[in-house]
Length: 293
Image 1 (cartoon, rainbow, N blue to C red):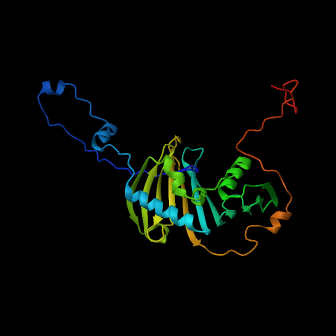
Image 2: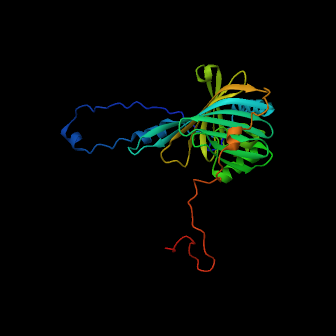
Image 3: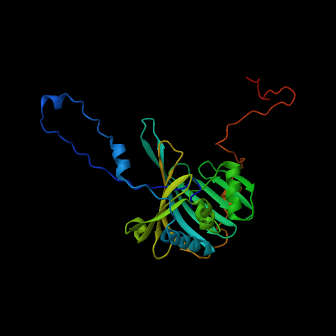
């Protein structure tokens, strides 16, 4: 669960500052330099107890129950709404929201329909190949893929930096994948608001991120996860809300394919996160498309 960028929510305590007015005294007392008051930050450090990096059994039990429920399901369908902050030119964060309608059939099939916000996108995996389809442009990229969902997700990222905010939920054993890197886990309480049901709230963290999870008390299904990353100087938040869970439902033939995508003009997969470099001439060391600078 802490992975695809992984996990966050810190509980903040506020301090009340009081203005202390010294009583009037003698002239000599007034001339004495006043002692510098401690900063609010220093006072906070003295007031707050040192945080303990512990793995609370109750929190671990909730995480294991959620992991077991997801891993046991042969098929899954759900809605994932991912919200992440991006810094604006004014220095304040703006929210970007993406919705995905997800259908999964273990061990080797997945479909994700993303209607927006942003560019519409469809993704199909049938156990043999992946198709990334842009319905507005009517263009598709197709490639061979490994025979498992986890292997396919790694290949999609390698080919085109495609990643899904819910990918950790699709692991064969989500908790087993999380456990080796887990540094802290504790139980926060319950919510009656998130997901329209009663959820247990758990906070977890590792060397990369800190997160808060809302997990259904009765059905053990995730309803929301909120993440902050330690290496982000702006402390931007990333959040995924889960809804419309359906487990172990039979899907009709053709669920994990699209005739329209199959017939669309094909383009190669490309990685937008890598800078393009011109091919090198092995004799001159210059780029084949122009002079080297």
